[in-house]
Length: 158
Image (cartoon, rainbow, N blue to C red; front, side, top):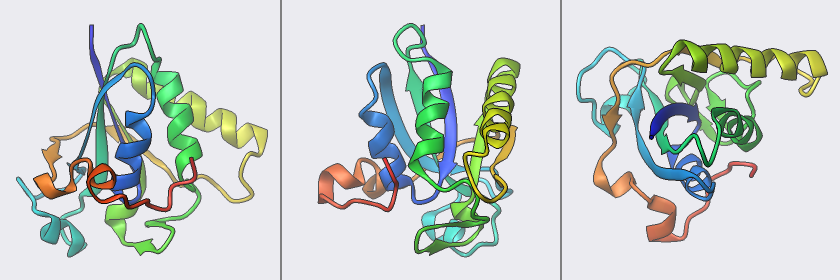
């Protein structure tokens, strides 16, 4: 059995690479979600006019890795307190977001965010959006496995 989860945590190159390292993850694909334009290009998304976020859609085996473990990695890999920014990247396409695919994912995402807030994990409020998944648009092929192909590392913290 396979399930899908979608996360926005800034530049998708590093996010994709981090999720690929997690045992139980079958695939991680860079793409766009949350906007209004159908089939956006990278240039469209970077214009900051489509409303899309750079996201990674993760296909995983829940028997080997839980959605909670995916959430834990998501929270650790970026700063969820910066609005529309991760590291040097600025714009709504770099926002922190969890796009849930089921009521169970929504419940777990909200609970994990609440637990981090209650624990005082961050000095500033968490601004991560938690919203229903919308159509996923796969990013151009040159974005897929970018870190593997180019030996580049993004600013993620994992």
